[in-house]
Length: 99
Image (tube, rainbow, N blue to C red; front, side):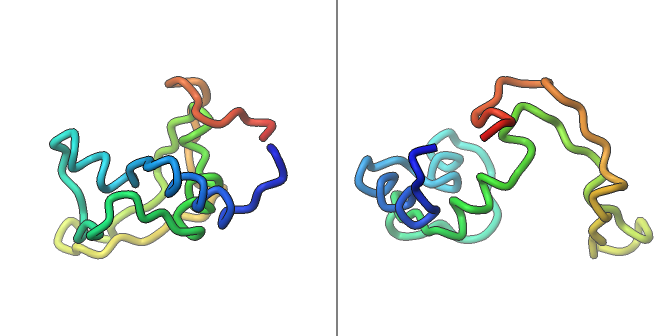
């Protein structure tokens, strides 16, 4: 909104000591995938950009983003966005839709 890019936003989040999503989940006792970083405040521009692009942060629930070809397979296949099912306003938005 203030004309900042993902890198500038990441720098501000680091300076404000905001926990990364993985560190936040660990602090709340929730399960996480992968290994947490040593510095729980180490935001990077790719993570910020990914968050800003996700519809879930606008208050929508998005289903059917992927599927498994067989119950025997562990590999998930991504569905194209036109096959996703979007349910708007299912929870409070973090980012408004216009932004």
